[in-house]
Length: 307
Image 1 (cartoon, helix red, strand yellow):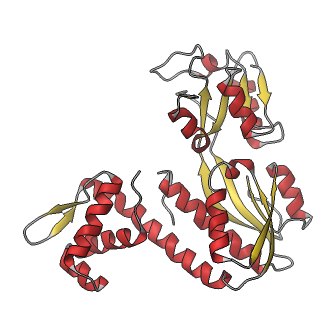
Image 2 (cartoon, helix red, strand yellow; image 1 turned 120 degrees about the vertical axis):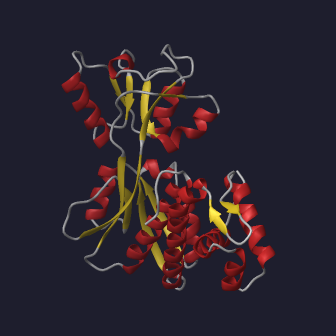
Image 3 (cartoon, helix red, strand yellow; image 1 turned 180 degrees about the horizontal axis):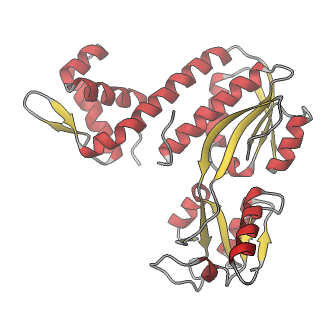
């Protein structure tokens, strides 16, 4: 994928607003060829035409119109990141950070890079564990910020919502399941079902669904780590319910197959949660930075529009 940058998105929005490369160039204090080059580079990166060039003006293509809200959202996130960075740049100390494994496998590296860039004087002490354990650690003030399956419903805990993770069914490519059509749930449950751990919401939702809608309860193999669930699915032990973002690379490498089913568990909902009593400005600012990072990741993955 060819990368694009914020300046190109800003140029895209100005050309769309003014309907003119020349007027956008005047606003940006640059030349019309420079604006044309930015738009051409953005179109190449996105693999689609954004504007129809006409004699006296330009107008958005259907694809450009569709991408406009997401571009606006990304710029809003960038502006928030700049504001957060200004308040964090001189902050010192240690951030005791608790992280759910789902986030470790997705946007945690992006967040740590942002944290290091914006808070060069802050050290991160990271605990990776289940959301249940992280909730307990947060309530006991042993960590400052938890990125977990939330929210944490306690009066002293502040929660910032983050984009959810859709769950999909995956199995080994050679597992004996029909391809090319949507399968009913009872066809999947001929095989063992690999799930999150027993203490998690996804396991509970699976168990309730099976108990209510199936005549016979299938075998469920709870896995205490995503890495273990991935390995079990790849080796053909069963069919796993895992976040789409976690399995995408494995599916592209033909190590896993995404199974189209008429039911899947609800999306995983995550929050950046921290205690407001006592006040912890570092945790609050880091939570906002985490939320911005998560929104940027979701927009990049085509799952959400940043607000």
